Length: 72
Image (cartoon, rainbow, N blue to C red; front, side, top):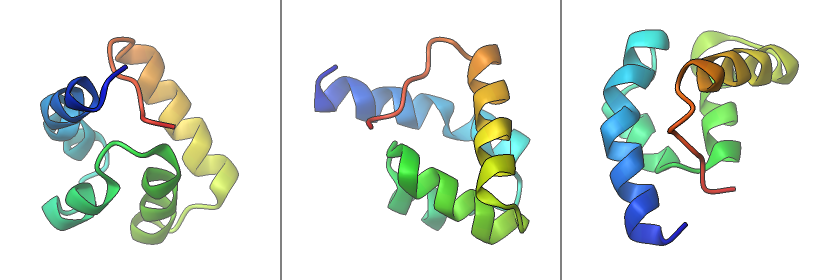
């Protein structure tokens, strides 16, 4: 997937991400910018989760939003 498509997809899904994880700020989402590792780190930081719990929540969310893909 090219960078333009990743960025477009990321912007499209940020609202849905904030619905699920309301403690993530717009600034957090700008820093994450569609990168999975940064997302996991911010999710842990803002929601007080251990890595395994953050990854599980993300996996469940992605199963409900199969059109979204992170830039790994």
